[in-house]
Length: 314
Ligand SMILES: Nc1ncnc2c1ncn2[C@@H]1O[C@H](COP(=O)(O)OP(=O)(O)OP(=O)(O)O)[C@@H](O)[C@H]1O
Image 1: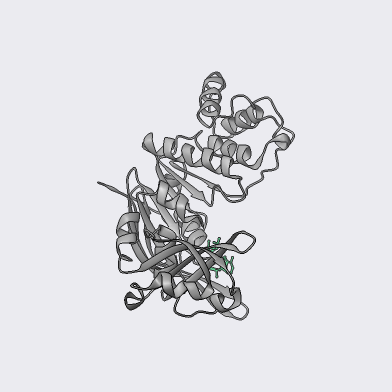
Image 2: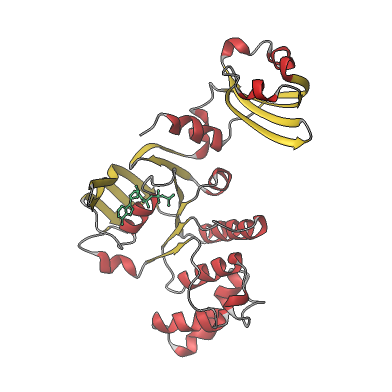
């Protein structure tokens, strides 16, 4: 499959009073046409900086990036009309317009002929499931509706690549689900999607390939299953325990990456990892902390892989 984005030894530094801040250090990766490609990493990892460079909003300090075969520095004008982007949490300042008016406004900015606008707006608002609310003013929309409207706006120029920076941030579960369905739908239509998110399950569901990025460097790239396979050696468990000795449980170093989630009263879901030699008698071992109601070995999730692989990265 053809590469639609090619990034080679890309670096970006910010000059600050205190010295130079490295946001990206020599990163290289490719994105294939039609992929949903996820950029995942902790706050400050360099995800937005990468997206800003690829969308030609920010110049790299060194290295090379090509989008649709064009250089982001010398040929940015050839890239701009073939891509689009949405930043999560964008409110926009068009509260007094209706969704439909907003779309017509942007159609005009994109120089869409008047007679073509009605059909286009109709199609795009239907696609993002905003047709019913098209005559409502934007200030009455939920965050999820606003986000879907932004995406409709971004489709006006029929982008070949759509950059979505944390598109589901701040959305409730239903709003987030609708947005994920929309991303899937756009991908099925052949649009290449570059997505950043802090939600591992979302990335697992949507992305064909993922890059984990930390401190401006890429630590691993691959499809989600390949990344999870890298952590096959981990012995992850989940138990439900009626806990009598909570403080002691919390400080038990044999239970690695311990997570406790209170179900009710003293009942907890307890997630942890153990070394191989501990595997035999885990249930008996946990008895010291309370009554073990259930215990099972867990499959490795992308979140487990993220926590494990990012611990020592960077
Ligand atoms: N304009 C700027 N001036 C100085 N430093 C900046 C600037 N923009 C970003 N940085 C720094 O560069 C690093 C990378 O930031 P970036 O916004 O790319 O991270 P991110 O992975 O998108 O994080 P988040 O998940 O919080 O959005 C951070 O340390 C950030 O503080």
